[in-house]
Length: 70
Image 1 (cartoon, rainbow, N blue to C red):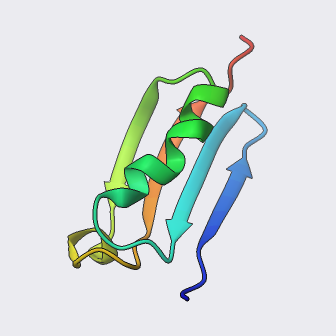
Image 2 (image 1 turned 60 degrees about the vertical axis):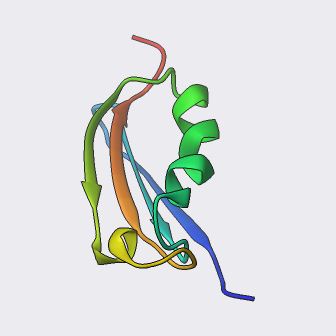
């Protein structure tokens, strides 16, 4: 089984960025849905990496959103 990671960065300005690694294809979108909901939705920016375009099994994507309490 392949290792899957979610790296989360929270900036001083409250911006949250997370990167998914080890999930190929669009299934990474399902893997991050819980994070997007927990942060209040509203993804500001999304960057797909080369793993996104590979057949299902190991992908990395970058999502940037704002924290929920403003």
